[in-house]
Length: 259
Image 1 (cartoon, rainbow, N blue to C red):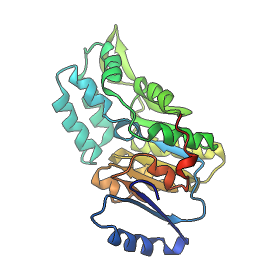
Image 2 (image 1 turned 90 degrees about the horizontal axis):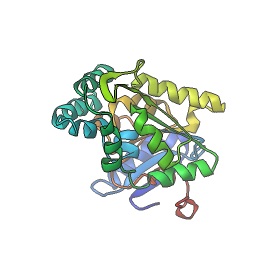
Image 3 (image 1 turned 90 degrees about the vertical axis):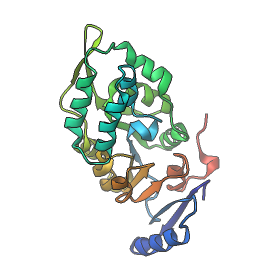
Image 4 (image 1 turned 60 degrees about the vertical axis):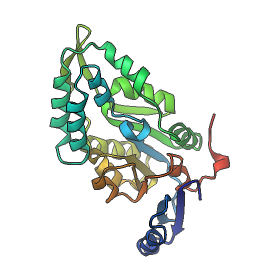
């Protein structure tokens, strides 16, 4: 058991009953629970969402702030993440609103607004040090995923590309868009490249576009997630930091890579 995170390993056919009993016992307590089969807890593949999962913000909303459009764009983001809007058209709509914004706002957004969430670097570096492949897959933009992947220690990243024109945003994003199905495809492709079953993968995210990969992975985790995601995930992290995902795999605190 870690700070705010409890992992219960059971026989596969006992998981549902034990989870229900444990959730009832922990009701009202600030403890994140993961009940799973004991066999295969430690995963060889991590596929993680970026915005509001590995980092503290939605980059597009923060970028919009430099155009004076944060409230308008954030409202669309919230609806898309809750599953009320299809992701791809919602992304095109938001990007179109930023046409003409200086591309320099991208660097300002990263420098001034983007921070790794607590435990993110330890999660990624510990799994990588133990032989896991760690991939950042985002419906956001490569400008940010490249930098966040390097900061956290991911070995690869996939995201959307913002199109620029003469130093300004063109209001368009390169096709095809990395959305819900593309994230699921990334999970499957990364597992296949490793020669590993999906049961050996862990996926973590917070929004509706993460749901397919969360449902498909051997351990799907909802991090501070929207209700539609939290209801379907194998485990939720609402209280602890991202090192909860290490405790869920049976790592001890003295095995964490923290440098």
